[in-house]
Length: 202
Image (tube, rainbow, N blue to C red):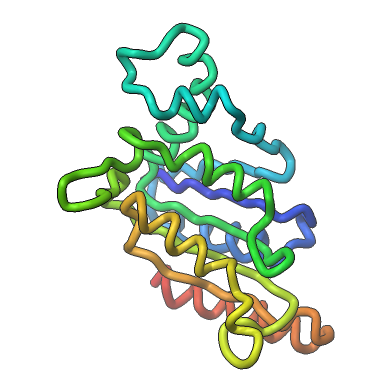
């Protein structure tokens, strides 16, 4: 079993989303000999933003690409291959200004590719990344899952839409929220999240 763990918080080991996501990956690997956890830390090793050359190359079929265009897509190709070879995807994101970290948005830009992870058909778009389980671990200082702030949640709502577009619809969300409301609230949020991953892994 291949587990792809993608983290994105700039807070490193202090990040709640990273801590919970790593715990989930380790829990899922227990009792599965040969399970491989591939970690992609987007904060420690940020990806380059896509540019005009990328935008042009991604629209071309492989046989039409020049050598320079193939090189432009080389990193994106590797990211797509890494995603395709995984059985389970764990994606961790803290909320920044109501959305996801820019490093994670760049990752999404690299893996949402026509003919690679989705295609257009007469019946509409079709995701090509299928047969995988995905877990979203999202952390936020406030409470955005309900109440007056819910309309400002562009974090897991965006991720559900983007990942669902490429076929990743077998999805679970683990939420760590309200951590800015003091140490007790943060501890409770983490405890609840750890209980949730125990249930999911079981």
